[in-house]
Image 1 (tube, rainbow, N blue to C red):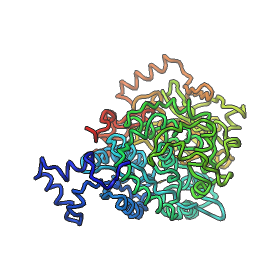
Image 2 (image 1 turned 45 degrees about the vertical axis):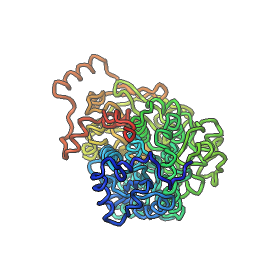
Image 3 (image 1 turned 135 degrees about the horizontal axis):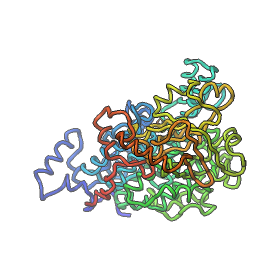
Image 4 (image 1 turned 45 degrees about the horizontal axis):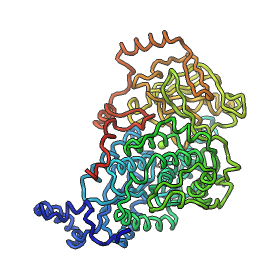
Length: 592
Ligand code: FES
Ligand code: MG
């Protein structure tokens, strides 16, 4: 490793700040960065300029603690001989953004690419956390390919209510059922939900945030053990300091995302996702990162490499515990070590700390076997996703680790295996339609019904809404029915324990098979064969398609903002990452 404080001719920032060929531009670049206190010596000494891509703000409370952690990052950067330049990343708050936070992942990606490419940055710290902030940052780092390291903001402390753990999101789904059944009132509902958010940080369940932060570590893009540390813990401050130091060394070593995020590291992430009970949003985001990295990764890889892996982590929604418990039990390294002992991990892949994934995690013990189970005694065998196809869509996934005993009893007669079931469809066109009609007896929902949500994909409800986990009507909940099969072209929150069949691609708004479905059609789902088909003759389907196309295709609401219109015109489907199609051709652009 070279001395990171000595001038390096390779630093791209020198083309801005120390370019004798173009002295008048150099002076212009220099003078404005001097005006807030940086010195000429710092800017021209060849010290690496390190960006801090700041995702925290008052609008992004999940990531807001990064505003504090940035101080420790700066100290680490400076101590290792770098200069920190902090800048804002377009905010993505999962719980605050209308119509969906999903709409802004690609916007944030695109804007971050422009910053990383267009400014004098030699390396960058990606401050990740809330669901879409992690993929947006990793996608941009993949495209630009300057040395990059991720720093998780960490989960909130555990939530508590009357002596029980209350987990982010998961308590909302439970509370909605209690509200629908008349067990609590509005004030009780808000109090229950608020109890799950006792501190700064992101969702404390194994929702999409904990999933994606864990996978950023599994991909090798964070320091080992960094993902699970709760936001308010002192260890979080410490890892921020070390992350700051490390990025300066990475610049000196020219260790880039392309050296770390290889196909093998994506396969590691898939295996880890099954073992942690990760979110159904993970396949979308990993596909997006992989495409921007130029790595081949197919949705079928999730079933091939992930389905047989057992669930080891006992976190809500698949289990009982929360983020603090996960950290104390050993976090991602303890899980990886269990998987490594079974030969399920590619150990030789490089990671951000300059060591291999295997060397980082080998021998890390589980500290609490209630929270992280040993491989021999998992919570669920074969806990990964299965991929379904048929005449309703080309691809959708189902998270098998969250199939409840009640659901299994009602739909899956063979207790040891997945099974097939069929029933009449009730179709909702978007979440508003669902909310209007779900509790109306005239909608005709019975325990045989399969609930369908369409018009909720990347084009139809721009960004794709997290709405496929539909609760049964209140009159069925009062009879003890807590879940009906849900199928749709939207997403669902990683905090939902619903075994929905979701992320269906192509979506109805792209005139996929779901656009042809009618309420009352019988649909057969075969989880063993991985099929989902509406049981009507092909000729009838062809006739429905003819009528649909004659009417101008599947109708969806008009765009409300310029970005909605732009994204809808170029966004791809979820099975291939829902990226801005065409953007993937811009690869490793810092080297051009
Ligand atoms: Fe931001 Fe869950 S809402 S992490
Ligand atoms: Mg979400």
